[in-house]
Image (cartoon, rainbow, N blue to C red; front, side, top):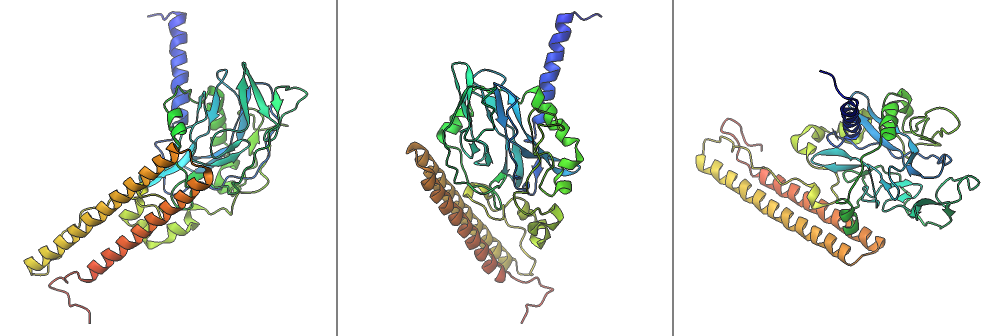
Length: 374
């Protein structure tokens, strides 16, 4: 059976779209520890009109761990479209990568400060006007001899940390605003083919693996996608923070890291929504006294029900406060204050629940073949 050229081209196009979407679909990967800090590097010169800066980030491969995907300039797929960077976030017992996308507005990217106009929310690097992209020279490296669509607006960035993930231990405590949530429902375009090739080239380069560069990649940024050599390549000045391999991370060496509950509870949860409800108690010990065993199990069940109710109430309270902040268009200082309060409330609840459980365990009846310690 012969295939007409038009059908062949259609199938080829569908195949390229499929490759593009699957190559960047890292949301299904769950990592037990967060990526390294964002390295310190300079932005290469913009290669031409219509290119949008896409910041570098840490990707993950199951065989050799985190590797750096250099920042690069990419031609926008459509006039008026901007890039929302991908980001790592804590959830369901691990860190997941949320894929970046193109769209008419910049959406939520975890509050991560990637620099060069991406300072946690929105984009200060430029804007579209009458079919042309205008670059903010205050945060972009642009040659005004070749690119005339420029302006200069000073951007005050108070974010000094280089944390590369949201939530969990040491992560950024940021939630999407109502505007960012609305952007999530707009029409989006997945990373274009040049970005897919850029990612694949980074994955195949051993020098970009965190285990090799210690968080300081020799190719931190490129002028064009997948061009990892030549004049447009920029190396990192320094790592964003001291690099700790997986085996040397403090949380990996704690005995409780191997417990089942350690996989579902972040070490320092920022919100009640990040804490899993307490599970039903195990079967009661066999002390030879059925009534005593049943009473202890009932005490456990009552405590867990009470703790889960408290957890649910705190989660609802915090979510209501997030909605109020969005409705009132609260400033960043107020948002940060509320986030700190939520983190303190959540950690106090976790500590209180742990103490309650320990007290109950101290009253646990001993099995009939064990003597109670004196």
